[in-house]
Amino acid sequence: MIAAPVSSLGADGTPRNLSRSARRCYRGAMTLKGRVKAGRLVVDEPTDLPEGTEIELLPLDPGDWLDAADRAALHDALRASDEDVKSGRLVDADAILSELRSR
Image (cartoon, rainbow, N blue to C red; front, top):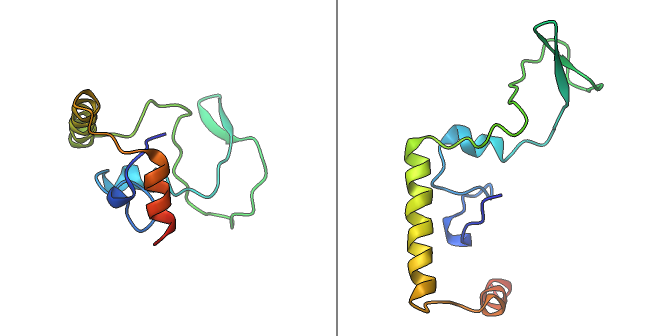
């Protein structure tokens, strides 16, 4: 899971700096399990999807969906965060939560 400051989240709650395809993967309301059988993908459980519905399948634990730009943005943010910690630029989580709740 990627944690991001509230200010960097889009309206749908996913990080703004991720590509559109990466953002879509965080919004999925349905998860189906399946297996490869004789070179075909077979879904192992029933679904209420209408006949002929096209779905997009992603392998379980493919690593991540970051492209080069997203990965660079993540690494930049992690380096900046590490520098904040080393320099003592920290904010108490209770203070942040209190501020957010007051909005």
